[in-house]
Image (cartoon, rainbow, N blue to C red; front, top):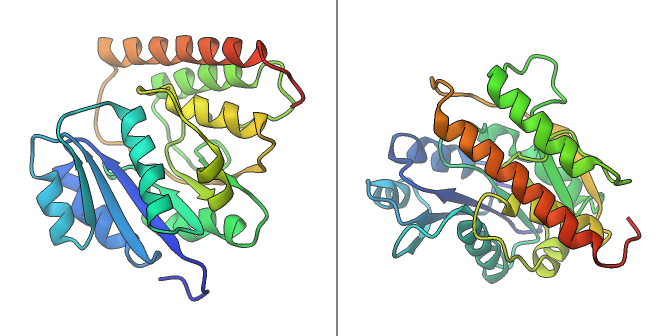
Amino acid sequence: MPDNKQRVVAVIPCFNTAPHVSVVVGAARKYVDEVIVVDDGSTDDTARLAREAGARVISHGKNLGYGKAIKTCFESGLKAKANALIIIDGDGQHQPEEIPNLVQPVLENRADLVIGSRFLGSNQVIPDYRRFGIKIITWLFNAGSKTKVSDAQSGFRAYSSKAINSLQLSEDGMGVSIEILEKARRNKLIIIEVPITCKYHHTSMTYNAVKHGLKVAMDVLRIRFRSYRKPKGV
């Protein structure tokens, strides 16, 4: 738990993450003042296991999508009066012991949004198809912008209270990750990145993975086009 007086809250969006959520919640509790799990309509024991591990659980009655879950994460952070909000996935890929590295720039007022980047560390092993997809999506996001990032798709992020108050989100799907970055730079929020490690479970490239990547790429183009119809300046 943080030693300072600022309140740090971790919110974990989950959908059918029963095999991992207990470990993630238990580890995250060591570094924050409160852990909240947003259960997006799971059909397994995610909610029960999260409560037993010490999290407060907010449940959607049905699966509403990643974007809706992130909106609930933001709303939960505001209601919990968080000075710093950590969002970390519940599937065991992110390492909760890296929370202090993400949250410190926010607590020191050096950043409004801290992205945990998989591409800043030297020893990160990322499946080739994932690396390719993330790189393409990140390139599309960075194109023509002064504010550039190395990992536009990372779900491991820290937010200041200023950020969670100012980012009004409309995306319901995976495009919310890009919407957050686009609105953050349009609002002139301070964005930095820190290296993280990511543990990938044994999976193979599937049609659904390719379809997902193409959908997110189209979301990037749509969000960027929509933004460039408004006044520039970043």
